[in-house]
Length: 413
Image (cartoon, rainbow, N blue to C red; front, side, top):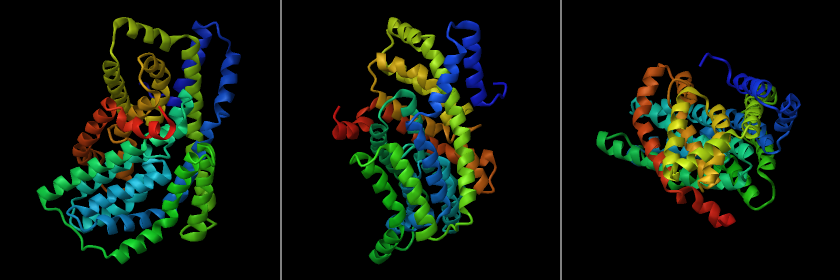
């Protein structure tokens, strides 16, 4: 509330708690700090960030957009639907929501306006579809959740596939409804030759989905190794296949990725300290016991989770919020019999909504940066699409099968 950076707030509050109220030693905190930094699962984060940076600058986005327009452009509101498909495909290769909005939005928003859509409509579509970057695997936020809770990253990635597709279809349904109502433009149907040619042109970028997902689920490599493979593959196709990134520009991509990685990892390691203090002081267990004694049903607890995360998402960046609330909510959810994978997907969907709610919705600021609209104008443009995302959140919360069907099918319940 007083403007202290999230990482410092997490670390400093942990140290003060140990000093003033606990019998635990400061040595345990320093040990935990280094153990957190060396967490094997978290190694995936710098590699996925690097992969997203190469893909954003290496010509992959515009090829994916061309393919999506060839598939959907001839429908009423087809270019907007193509934008959603492009966001879904780019999300599946980048794992980052802001990267998806920048890469896709900077190309399609201008294109949609030129073909007769209002700028507000274009911004709303890209802003909402861009949130799928943290739901459709690979997802950096899912890696963070898995690291905190020690659940399987692979299982969590699989759990994000069906919800990600459903969210995309719901947004496309909203577009089709508005397109019929307001007679939005449609483009000339693309020939089968153009569909095949654009698909072939985008194949090198789309193959990354097959490499990551196929590699993890066939057991060839772990999610962390998949992230490293993705970073090397993204470098090769950006520099040597599409040739839209020169070797001279590579150091800048590496530097930018390093800055994001250092910022995120510093927050994560300090959040791990907070989790350690909460555990040693038995705080989540005490809250869980109080909830069990009060007789709170799982469905009531999930309402509390959603309200807490939605309100928190208004004021905090997703990873920071996830890192603070997960150590508290996770043990309670387990005691109430809520599946940890289902809880993870609920939390990620809440983070999605947080990406497009003011005042710190990251995607809002990205959209302000790539358009000449004010923050207030972008917020207004997002409102109708926010309603779709909130409806989607309710479905994910109270229909566990949407999240758990595929992982249970592939890995057993």
